[in-house]
Structure formats: C-alpha cells, structure tokens
Image (tube, rainbow, N blue to C red):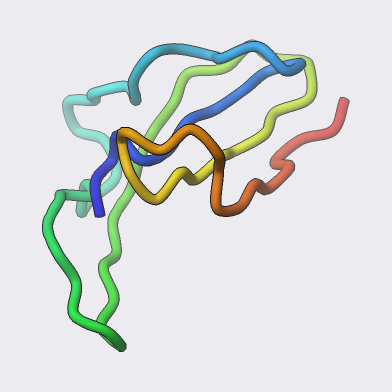
Length: 77
C-alpha cells in the first residue's frame, strides 16, 4: 500500500498529480509498505479539490497500475 496508489478526479480531470501534504493535518497519515493477507493499514490521504464539481476517488492498487481496482464518488455536483 502507498498514498500514491490513490488519485482524485474532479469532473473527470485529475485534481492533482499527488496528494496534499499538510502541517498539522489529520493523523495518522497513510504510509507505505506490504501487507500480508488478512492484515489492514489505516491512515489519511488528503487532496485539495475545487468547491464544486463531481469528485471521484480512485484506487489503483499499485502506483504503476493503469486500471483502478475501485472508485468511489465522494461528491456528485
């Protein structure tokens, strides 16, 4: 797992190349590493997005993956 496995799209356009790094942001930040089967990781990944527009969170599973494993609509306006 890695924060670079995630991407945000606003109105089908990539919001940014990378997540936003915050000072005094939510903790814990998502780190990176390998997970054995049945284990979990938790942490925050923060993006800056415009105040309006459809926002989609996409998880690729690998920084080098071309197709997402899943996507979630965070805001549909």
